[in-house]
Length: 338
Ligand SMILES: [Zn+2]
Image 1 (cartoon, rainbow, N blue to C red):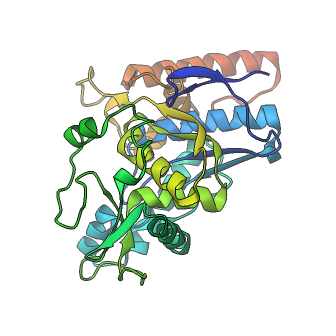
Image 2 (cartoon, protein in one colour; image 1 turned 90 degrees about the vertical axis):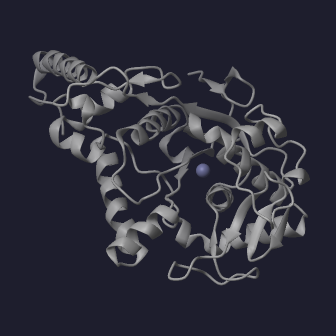
């Protein structure tokens, strides 16, 4: 079976050729576990689960290694923990458990690896150390920043120039930055927030470095496929790529970049409609998870998908028809699995 994938980097469809068909690697950016996840956050979970299953079918289940991260330290998590007066692990364990349950309800296989940021601090610090050593990062006032001018290929993934990027991004101006687009690898924690000792002062990692360090630790560079939502192309994936390439002097970070489009909620106004149920956690109590999965897969993964009650109803009916046909063909379950 030949597989052709649309690659964001080249902007075209390319035949998929893994570096090693006995070890096919895929990484997808996962959730920040500070709340129940919006149904839109499950579009990549389901879309890349489908790709994972296709790859397992082609290359064999043992040959495909899939990693997806869990961001379990960040400002939103810290704020929620402070509001509830509990350690961040109480928040992250609660919402990670819900995320796992909801992913399972939507029929997504667990990834081979699911690294958590707080359990990857050593690898993150080792990578930051190599970036500093390679002059691709610098320490300033308790922060470590990626030196954007150290990498000439910055912007190649998103197709943006440095000027575009500064104009388009909400670049934080800070006196310790050499260039306005330099981004944080390590930063000091505020009083009461979790922190880890480091050669650059106690603090915690930035978000972008987490994925690069996890890819290196779980899969090794370069990987075959990197996936995520279209909103991650810039700056997150551009930054991930720059970090990975500069830390390891690698030639390639990911050989294929895949990005899914958003769910849209434009058309529907009726408050009783299922289309207004936006937390997957609530939705799977009202509609069989398999029907939600069908609805999420009903449009092309790169295109926007309008999320409505009608779409869910159609998905449920389509599944009912299939199960009806299967039942008539002989002895299958009476209703879709929840
Ligand atoms: Zn990521």
